[in-house]
Length: 212
Image 1 (cartoon, one colour):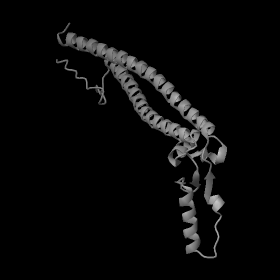
Image 2 (cartoon, one colour):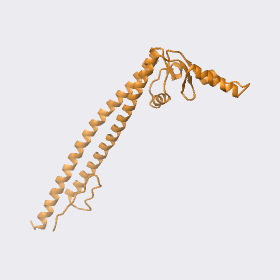
Image 3 (tube, one colour):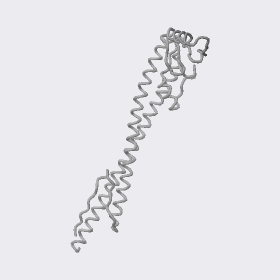
Image 4 (tube, helix red, strand yellow):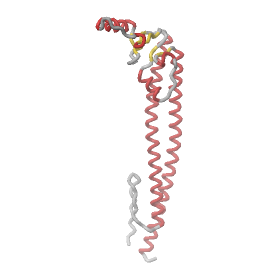
């Protein structure tokens, strides 16, 4: 009688077939638990990769906000903020748009003060994509001007909020790495248990085949 037992890699579902051997039943259980641990570890790895990409994205946002804060500090801001699009217009561009619209629509009026918000020279506008990101992730925006444009102090609030979020991403990543180490330790333990049980079963079958 041949005791030829083959173990598939844990990347595939391991099947040892129907058996009444306690050792093989135990091995199947250990392999199932090992596969579950591997899956959990891989899920955490994917989550870490996603968090790292998001952290890079946040770092770019922080840099952009610092540049806008610097402009506000140096009174290089001003102009108009187009509410619907988030586009920043110079005073000349703003006036030209209004003049053209009034020329094309004689006798009609528009609530320009709702469509365009005037910024002082010590205020700069937040890019729409950063504003959306902060709102989507529940990050605090300075409340001035409906969270559309800010002076240097307002920008400090926004930058601090983004930095805190970035630090939280780092903390979560470290915690996930601990979980991965734990799952991989369990994976190795279960795999060793399965191998040991299979070896014992093989030895038992060999002994039976030899009539011992």
